[in-house]
Image 1 (cartoon, rainbow, N blue to C red):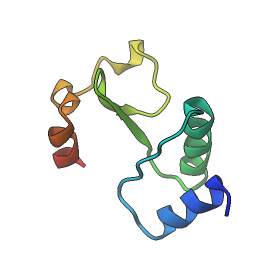
Image 2 (image 1 turned 45 degrees about the horizontal axis):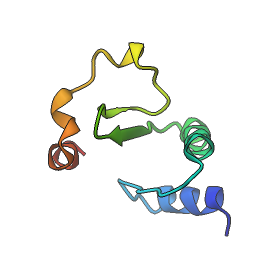
Image 3 (image 1 turned 90 degrees about the vertical axis):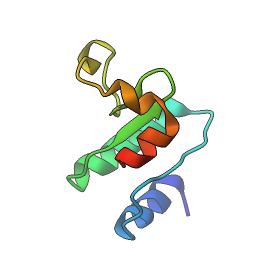
Length: 79
C-alpha cells in the first residue's frame, strides 16, 4: 500500500489526527492537501514555532493563528 492510499484509508476510517514522519515534508504535504481537497476536508499542520495553521499557509496568511496552540498539549486539546 502506498502512502496516498494508506492516508485515504485512514481518512475514510475517520482518524481525527495523522502523525506523519518523513524526510520529504513538502511532498507529503502536497499529497495531504490534494487528498483533502478531493474529499472536501480541511487539513492543518502543527509546528512548535507556529502552532496549528492550515497546511501550506504562508507566514503572512497566518496572522489569525492561535498562539496558544504552540504548546503541544493545548494543540491536542483544540483538536
